[in-house]
Image 1 (cartoon, rainbow, N blue to C red):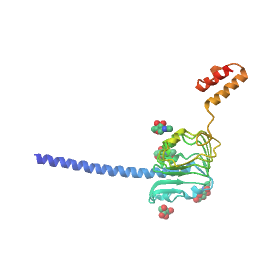
Image 2 (cartoon, rainbow, N blue to C red):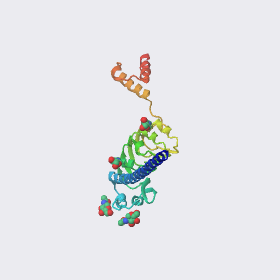
Image 3 (cartoon, helix red, strand yellow):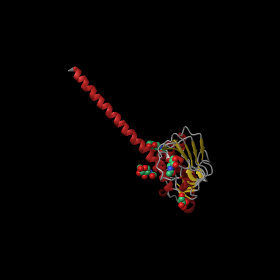
Image 4 (spheres, protein in one colour):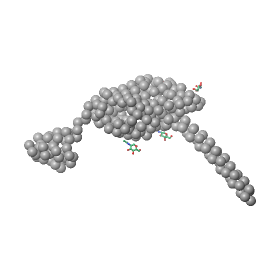
Length: 245
Ligand SMILES: *[C@@H]1O[C@H](CO)[C@@H](O)[C@H](O)[C@H]1NC(C)=O
Ligand SMILES: *[C@@H]1O[C@H](CO)[C@@H](O)[C@H](O)[C@H]1NC(C)=O
Ligand SMILES: *[C@@H]1O[C@H](CO)[C@@H](O)[C@H](O)[C@H]1NC(C)=O
Ligand SMILES: *[C@@H]1O[C@H](CO)[C@@H](O)[C@H](O)[C@H]1NC(C)=O
């Protein structure tokens, strides 16, 4: 009886093992083909979202050939393995590309490097850039026309070694959170006329701005218009300063 129980138990055990092996196999094929499919969609979406003024992508990025790893021969694409459509790096520097930051990059889930430098890309950097470039170690967006703020979420791209944002039209304060990128070796933000804060020139402080606007209120009206102003410490200081005078 004990022997039978043992046999039954091990048979059950065997079934479970075979079951889990099959399940694992199934899962791995699923995630394998899903990953590859996702990278192909990534490049399709990038191509669709960019204006290819010189026709480089048009002539090189041909999606009709469906052999495994076909995208690895595309201009500017490096794969992890030559015969597997899994993108390691995207290097599309100086190709006359126009348009906004290509969000399709989010579906190249194993990407480590993105170089879109020296094109005519414009518009804001996506605020969820940390979700789009989770594992990227090198990002070069220099020499474009990107504008708006540097998203603080960049500080969540914790593998970043090289971050080049110079020669764009970015503005505002360089987020202090960038300091959290402990692996950062190269960080360039020069030639963005509206950008301020370390390592560039300091930004005008808020209390300075408030004193200036308060001075204007005094000049134009000669009365204190408290209701229109904020409640910052800087404000209180400038307020007492003017009262004392
Ligand atoms: C794209 O390439 C095809 C041939 O490969 C060509 O006929 C077509 O004119 C090109 N389109 C653009 C916009 O360059
Ligand atoms: C498809 O791509 C493979 C691998 O890049 C290449 O060897 C083959 O010649 C291509 N076939 C066609 C019809 O373009
Ligand atoms: C990424 O892939 C998902 C699933 O295929 C798709 O729904 C989504 O639109 C893609 N993202 C972009 C920006 O193309
Ligand atoms: C970083 O990611 C976490 C989790 O998604 C989020 O809570 C946090 O606000 C992000 N940090 C920044 C600076 O956006």
